[in-house]
Length: 432
Image (cartoon, rainbow, N blue to C red; front, side):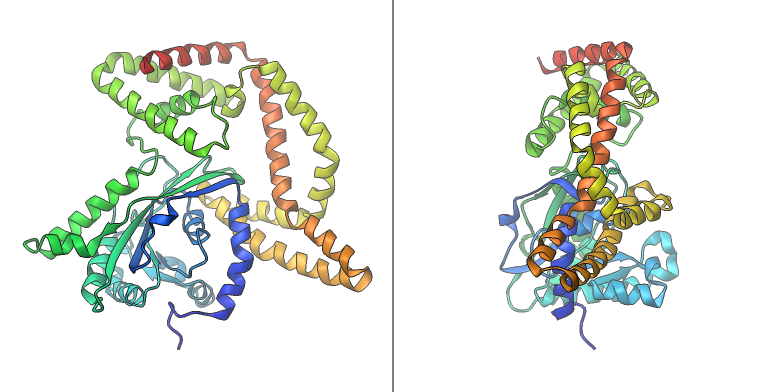
């Protein structure tokens, strides 16, 4: 029986189809720091976990190398699902919350993970153990330190074991075709770390590896303390960076991190004034959401011009949207139907992506066969090429319509505009 880390011809054929869909799930996707990935040892990728299946999929699409993942064991219960997940090089791992008896099986997963790394196949584990759509981090589980430490003991050819932290920063966790900045951090040389501290016990090294990994990931994301001021802090942060175009991912990310730092410092030095600011931000958020106004509309400096421009774009692209939307309705329509039944809103984009990969590929193949049998081949290929991105463009048009409606609502809401200006003035004072 073939090992999970061994190359598979069918696996790469599916990757050739899936990778463009994964990248196409974002309006703007940018990978930074990939040149830091070590090429001379065993690599454990460690991304933050905030957007369900989209997190490992985005790491997978980072390059063309094969990669082995772990996922929670309860989704492997059905034999068919187990075979599918194994084909995609995903192994089960038990968690403490699954019960003491199930955790006893974790040792087998750790051993298999070490075997994967010892054969120079990159391994990806989401060390927080569960996803949470927030700009913060959960405590890391023991899995990553056990796997890295065990792999280091198993490697006998002198190569090092590295943990490569990855920060995934999404523009929106719940909207399909948002943005993603994926930043690869400096590798943690586990082999060198262990060699430098021979006096430490195995358990002490576990704690040190987890500490260093957690700090490294936090340095690559916008990390807000998970407390009562989280929502207000994030609203103020987004408000402050609104003038930066959303496609300038690095510039907006840096501005967001800077503002989170300023707000944290303000809260420590002047807690009473900070409390007043956060209360104003909370009131602003309540009014904005009750009025169904997006932050994109709030960011505009000229509400009337923005509303008119969005209306013109909506009308201009309407014929194209109707044509492409109708043609691709079986794809995006089914994706939306399935996603609507998913209780976890952060998991819906994963369902959309998976549905489009399977269903839209099948529909395109059928369409191509029918067209090749009825019209000249070059016309058939041209039609298929136009249809290929149709579901993605349809989602973009839906977003344009939403923003157009939001911009008109914002134009008619003078109270919200005044609150916005008051908050921006206070944020400017923080930066002085």
